[in-house]
Image 1 (spheres, rainbow, N blue to C red):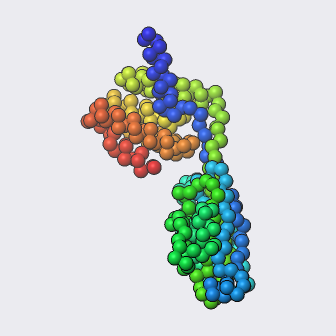
Image 2: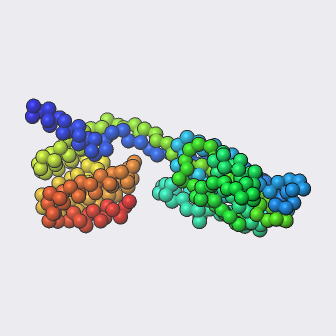
Image 3: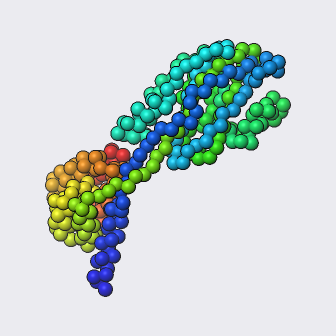
Length: 308
């Protein structure tokens, strides 16, 4: 019975440490609307031909995490502008800090000269928008996140709506003057690709699981030994963190702090760093609950938190 308990704890430790299949996050930009040029008449002149409103269908691809549209405007029927939205987003995705690094302020949009209104709509409200029900005491519903009004140029980010078919309702708010609108739509997708592990990595994870079990059993010296065995096979930041915490529990504050600094440096280079950092913080919180006077723990927690 005791042997079964140890084996069970061992596999639980593997799960807690995140030693299941690791994944590489693949982010891509996918162009949905390629620099579409639209001419819209003024509202009053549209009654004599042409139109003052139109819609653009957006089919969001699988695994969309956010999407963008950019536009600019010129007066009259002629006009063109290079938005290059997809190219700009693709360059930003190369940034190792990932998707969170994308800020709309970093995306360049050619300066416009005439105002436009754009609304994010579902199919039902797209039809109501085109029928101009709002001019006859009716209403259409739209999503504020994707809206701009009386705007000459803009880059708009949408991350609340990530799937399905949607429409951009484009309107010329001017009664008399026609406008030319250049618009582009790009989605950012995120997929997970399994990372193949070497035999040394797998052995390191198994030793790390044993180290975690010994830590839970308060056998901190043995925990450190298993961590060293794991590190001799393959350096894992999570295993170094376990060793550092065991050293703190043994009263070795300086050694533990040094180990944690090496762990933080290593985790930042490995897949899914934020997940591992959160697990490290969780383990420190548990240790502090057991030993409120644990020296060095609070300071190390602050260091790890600053990495998120």
